[in-house]
Image (tube, rainbow, N blue to C red; front, side):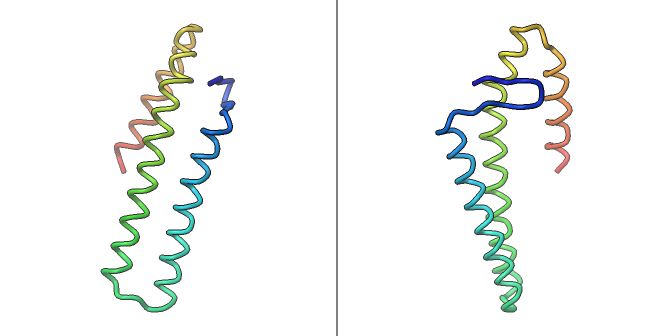
Length: 97
């Protein structure tokens, strides 16, 4: 796991796993759109929207863990402590949701 200034080199397995998760979420969103277009019952749409939100939250957690285990640790070892401040700011935004 190599982090560079504002980029991240991911191995193919990690990249594929993240993209597959995003494609599943994209499919869920398309499904919700179709439900609205077809006048589905509000509670059914809300249930699917919550599921999509949970899937996106799970994606965020996986990406955050990867960032901490890779980028953050590498940057701290290299003396780039501003990465910690960046993470704290990002966590603050995530918690506000």
